[in-house]
Image (cartoon, rainbow, N blue to C red):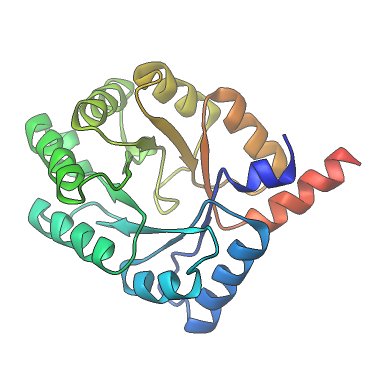
Length: 222
């Protein structure tokens, strides 16, 4: 895999609450320079990023219900619609983790389906926050996501107790098969981390260390 090919698998991420306009502009400039798949940002930055990246071949990925997933379904649906109106090309949504843990699968399934339907063909990545879920709960949410027509299932927000692990990636890939993608996110900082996730079955990587990872890749190949 070339650096260019690897870059196209990375969502270049900046989700800190204190990110400034300067920070977001730099994120977009890096994404355009290196050819990342998307920039992954909070909803308030969607239109700004869309303008910064116009014609650059880099999408804007907006996170919905982030990072706790505890918004109501109606709010997540409207947040997703608003993000698309503001230029989002992809949506990452956090499931209602508490509803999963409380044994309300129908609520979670309907929530995922509602967001997927609301954005009419825009790829939706469903964030499980795997560190909080049992293996069966992970399996159940993956199946819900496939039924709803989600484009990806995603390991974590990066704000939970744990990030991506090869074991979780492999489990998610085993459940969804070829029906949707698997995005590994949370704690991915090195080329070795990325390699492990790709070998486990990921086909998208979420990280705030995209530039460093590409540099690390170059060092490993020389």
